[in-house]
Length: 71
Image (cartoon, rainbow, N blue to C red):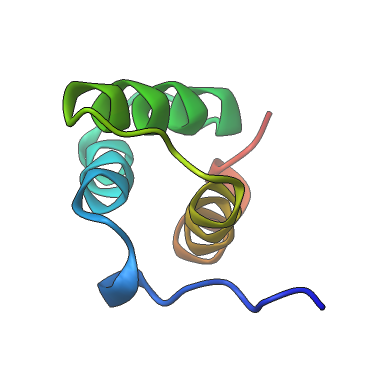
């Protein structure tokens, strides 16, 4: 059974920071950049980004940024 994406408030802190970093940039918002930020911020906290957190963050970014979140 697949779990629904986590809501923003339930994401780990590093995932929230990655999403907010994309929100603050004028650069193109790309899934690859989100993955890089998730991995970097998780690693700096001595953690790893699990698949569910990654999928949830991508879901939130697609909703938040719409067509500007493209490959």
